[in-house]
Length: 353
Image 1 (cartoon, helix red, strand yellow):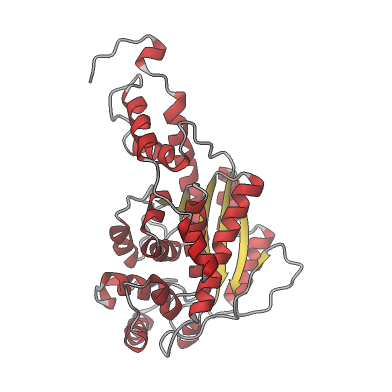
Image 2 (cartoon, one colour):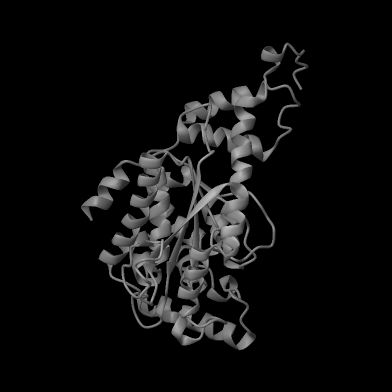
């Protein structure tokens, strides 16, 4: 716990002074004021995050956190649990959606085994940080111990902090892989929002009506059995979360601690971000939500975070695919800030409009 406390103490809000200076420049550029909309909002936020008017997002890295869930064995997914390990192998071979989209935007992908149920070969070029072979079923008791939850947070934080300090990555993305992980993610947003589970539960991998009904009942049972305290984010995480969700949450804490922007993917990655922001509210200053997932509970997460997604493309894949696509938009917003000349710099008459 001491290491987590020390990490939390490093997290400070973004610099509002730099944001204000950025806004002054954006309003003075040779174009109608406000004409680049959310690109301007993102640019000003990036200035406050990095304490600079020249944020460099050219080195981009996505961590895809993988983990399994005991609840998956109770029939909440259209796919069997062994698909998690099989998909990790696909990531390793470069066959998957995240590989293609990350390459397209010039981002590296690193897969992290936070808690896959299988023994993954040590020679696979992934980051081996297994906390356990899948969580325990949240329908019957806590997913993990409090100590395991802290371990997961620190895994994510240390990876991001190292990527920035040792390699200079200026933009971090997070994604997930884990069969059944929409179930704990739905439980998390239900715990924090207090809204009925049925309103928040989606079909995940595309389950039928019978499986959807079972999924809702199991989430309701998980909340009743565990009674997670919404005022204690660590309690929520250890009781109804997942190893990879802990890693995702820790990634945001790590990014905030070194003043680097992080863009999270869809439903599961946002669940991790939500945990992090409930644990340390200032971490929200460093978070960009990549896209609005069609997974029904994601809208509730966005509302709790008071966030505006960068994209809205009817996606629901995970892996970090939305984060990859949003990275180029964020990089473009950074270039808007410094590369567009002001009226004074260009010698153009300012109409004041």
